[in-house]
Image (tube, rainbow, N blue to C red; front, top):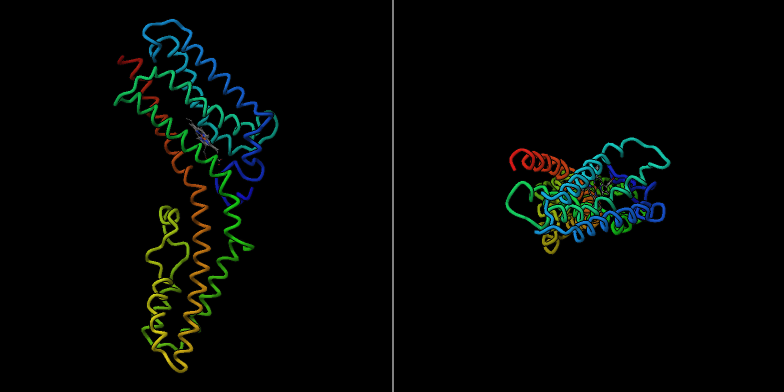
Length: 291
Ligand code: HEM
């Protein structure tokens, strides 16, 4: 899996998604399924009327289990930064993280007893579900996007892609010298622009409505019709260079877009985890002190 350039991830070479999802013959999937089954049976078979909710002993047990799981899942952030092998390898830890994280859908939902409302309890539940959904997105993204990411680079490395644009910029600078003042200014503006400008949202959309290279092309192409003589030839060469630069920029932006799609979920997963911990603390305090 080509995730070498993805920062802050445990899912790179050492732990491909297949590797950690299948870890030790799906050990953590089996444990997670067992937990879900036990929680489901406890919920169905315990003869309480009305059906068990957060306040019953089944509810307290499931709530405690869910809280401990959430705290443990949160510790992956610390664990990721301490590399060890063996029984508690990062791969095993990530495998457990994914499957036990998914088991919370069953455990925490049964803990709620399906009682939802506009309160801090449902807020904690909703945040947990958002963290889980972002985690699912992460797993799907890591299984689909890395191949597209390497394809988007073609045979080029990232520095080579940047180098190609810089070379074109140098050629443009020389090529624009015979042009008139106004045309030179248009070309210079496109050279001054960084291909990496733009925040996460613009990287995700892959669109740069104010791209100065596109603007230069839009302004200079129509002038080709009227241009004659040596000035016309220079303009023709500059437009050809701008077209090559636009193609090189499109490749970089496609690459940045895929990379952003691969990273974006962590910007949701991690901050919402902290919001979840805060809501969970408020939920527990309100249950024990104000119920
Ligand atoms: C309430 C449940 C969950 C909590 C509190 C939680 C929390 C966290 C935290 C704190 C990290 C460490 C991020 C970092 O420091 O970079 C993490 C990483 C991760 N989480 Fe979760 N998570 C939960 C559920 C899930 C689920 C259900 C999945 C997948 C289906 C998942 C997939 C992942 C993956 C793959 C990573 C590792 C990312 C990487 O290293 O690149 N998580 N999670």
